[in-house]
Length: 307
Image (tube, one colour):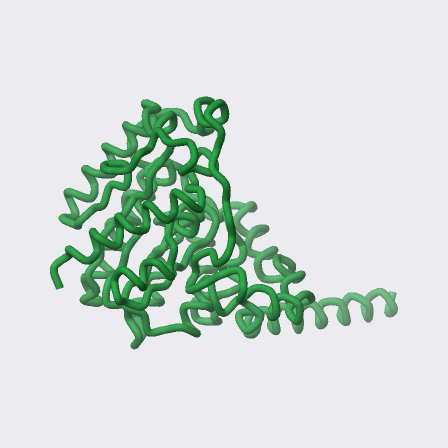
């Protein structure tokens, strides 16, 4: 019995030590050219983009900087929705090195989806104050067993491989990203037959998710409170996807919400050749060629914004 008790105490002590070390130190193992760790290393920036992989794959950061003359950075994580953006932006906008312009992803498909934690790298990359904010956010009422299990996984075992592989990642990762965007990565376009079959696993209702709508309102409030101009931008979707009734409905709902908040919105579909298969990599991401075309259009729009 004493042996079992000793094993239990030692195991819990080791677990607590490892959890504490991860909590207070994992962000030092994060990439310095992407995510919230990258932003901290590269701050201050003139234009901050925030969003999901939809954002990461839509902008050529080097080209944006060349065309606007501004320093840009993309904070992008897979599936990052407005609900998850709130604690991240609260942390960024409360700091001393605020961006001069905030560009928030306006992705209609995510706007209509119930909130979920999609990318554990955000928690791994976050410094301790942001980790606390994220945990409080993830465990907000009404709490469930799944929430506690997810929180435990984030604290204890998610992304441990990034620590083990850090020496190699430190050599390779800087070459894969530039200020949060892809660097030197070629993403081919689609063939015509692939393009025409594109769909997304999303059905009605076409109205915005209530939590996502509330988060959008909070994002605008945080930016205005910090005196940081905020705009929203939606990168193009392939024609067959953009014309789906559910996407058209969600996009209209999102536009109404943005109109109510009186914020500027750039609709990437408005003047983009969305029926060109070579400009898209899949149902919601641009190819390298498409990224170049869209980046140029966004840069022109940004250059035309009032100072």
